[in-house]
Length: 500
Image: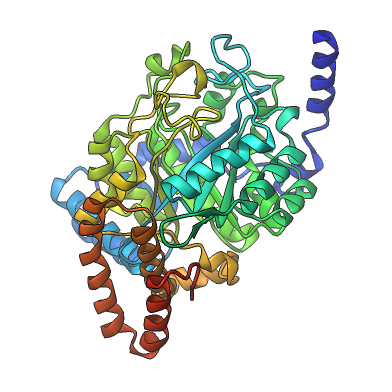
């Protein structure tokens, strides 16, 4: 039986990579990550004078993508005062594009079987200490009921290992199961309104099917863009060992009609400055070749994992100070994109990084397969998860802290259902218009969540935020005030999912 399964997996693997869906994006046989050029730019960058830095900041404030030379210059800044100006500019850009809101979500791991053998991953194929599992549809439903009915999430990032047991059919079926769940809450009902997917690279034909199943954002992280480092960490002969198949995942998704794509690296695998530059190159390439850049850039930083010594031995561990620099520079370099900070970071670190221009973060996070339905079990069990989380606080606690920091938590998914995706949303983001829709919908969804899920303490912290935001709507958007207040009164009365 084991031999048969091995042969079946090998057959499945042999059919996964479509070379024609790599070759057609290459330019003269070359990809868009020129390692030598990036390294030369970093080596040649000298600490820029203040006037040039301010010119670069002015360009970023116009929501224009920076050039590689401009980004390399920012990475070379050493003056503490200029760094403070860069951080302040990043915060202003975030508010200009996304308004004063933070979107929350939860990761939902549905399968941890994997055919790959990545050196840094607790779920790698050869890690015998990991307890493997794949949820049934009934178990997926139970997890969703906990997330939407007990915790109060409206959007998920669902995560799957690369394995035939969790291929396209399983992914689309679980997505449909998630969308069908509705749970009674204190005042209304809970449901997941947007399912984003973090899964292995797929062919264009598969991505079209994924889109038909209700895909939100499609995430594939390159892990590291540095080719030699990538080859060392992803064994040759594994699916993930094919650098180019992974590199062009976003091209295929956009070709398939998936409007929103998310990129990222695992900080700690390679030189963080190289990764920042490569993420910029990826954004520039997508803008040029496909017409739109990444909807989001994520910032996971390597954390310990069970029986995975590489996580403690990497010579590219990223310090807190350098991690802060990476986020600051990317906020400026790709000013239109959403920026995701994960619960890999501890609570204190997340508090310090949020003001740098973060737009999304997860909360109540559990990364064990089947963890949300186990309310009485430990938040973390090393032999059941990919890595160790730094912050396992509840969504209620995170929302309360965000309110105390002056942010409104948004549970909005309206733009995706109104067609504000792809090039449309990119144009709105660059012009600052999307932030207006975001403000209206953030207030409505925050009102829902406060009434349906908030603890008394969190409701006390949240109410002044609601009043402040309504005051800003009254002052800045008088033309829609009457309609907004009608939606707000109806939401307060128990209606749900009203949006602009």
